[in-house]
Amino acid sequence: MEAMTINVASQYSGDVQYRAYVQGIGWQNYVSNGQDAGTFGQSKRIEAFQVRLTGQLAQKYDVYYHTYAQNLGWLGWTKNDKPSGTALIAYRLEAVQIKLVPKNTVGPSTSDAPYVEPANVSYSTHIQNIGWQQRQYNGQLAGTTGQGLRIEGFNVEVHDNVGISGGLSYNTFSQNIAWQNWVSQPATAGTVGRGLRTEAMHMKLTGDMAKYYNVYYQVHVQNLGWLGLASNGEMAGTSNLADRIESMRVIVTVKGQPAPASMPTYRKSNYTYGFNIKQNRIGANVSNNYFGYSDNSIIVAHEAGAPGSLDAQVNYMKNNWQSNQAFVSHFVGSNGRIEQLSDTGIAQWGAGATGNKKANGRLQI
Image (cartoon, rainbow, N blue to C red; front, side, top):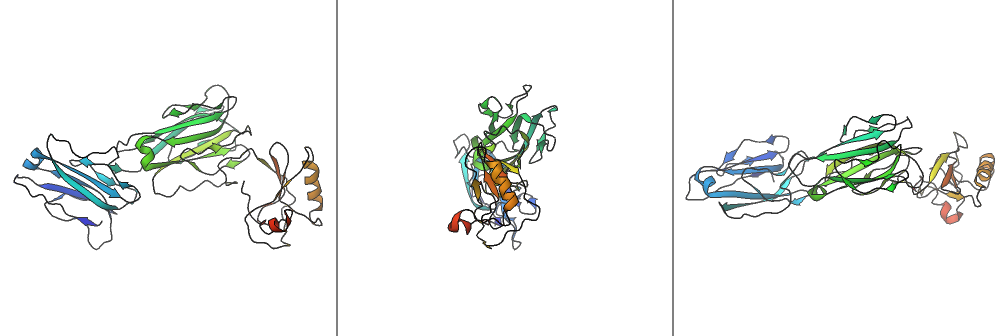
């Protein structure tokens, strides 16, 4: 939709006035009684509009309207000069519906929000030896990295500017406690003053916020660095590793928008399933392309077998890999311990003819 006109045929005096929120322009001035709102020949979308009545028309009627917005569908009804549609998210209007309703009678209504803008999210972390930090916003880093300090507790709050119902709920997996109960913004999750690390968390939106927005969150974990983005109730962090979360960030976006860029991650997973990977390098210039496979779909993590045999097998591979008739980049031992001997993305053979042809890829656990 690029332009629109509105007329009212009535015995009463007064005008129908309206204006459009246009791509690259913003809110235009009001026009009335069949004049053009929007643009022609500029390929600019209408994203929102407002309608109001004047004179006797305004005394006798309310004007109700709602819009069908890209990626969101039909939004809720609103009336009498309140905005309908979206702004600041580059979504076009595709349809509108407008209705005059006599004063003191019931007009159309839905529980859905009539107008959507980007939301802002703020959060604060309680850090070991530091206490509560300054509040952060919209993807900024909260906590610390490289200092070995745990997040003990945090609170989060989402704010929208148009009165959409709902908010954020979240919980934590805390040292010596396990999963705590869900709390709602702006309450604190985790602990304060007890010296306990936060190891994992969930976050989810509630009410109409959940209809129109996604919440994304990412954590930086002891020994692992930044893990992948989690969203809308997924778990972020680790379980059964006793690893602390050291920093975090939270972003809320409107439905249909692309996920935010992730912090650089060592691993694809949002959490670790109990694996604990340690570097145990063969050398900086390992090159093992004897087979030249290019499938890139798996790596081979070789099981060490009996408890206590991991170190012996790793040492043997490090001393004999150039002449050995097998090569893998990872060995797996007991208690979730994994030793990484080399970079992935090089040829590996240790999984049989079928597996070997797929074993030239990146680590995906």
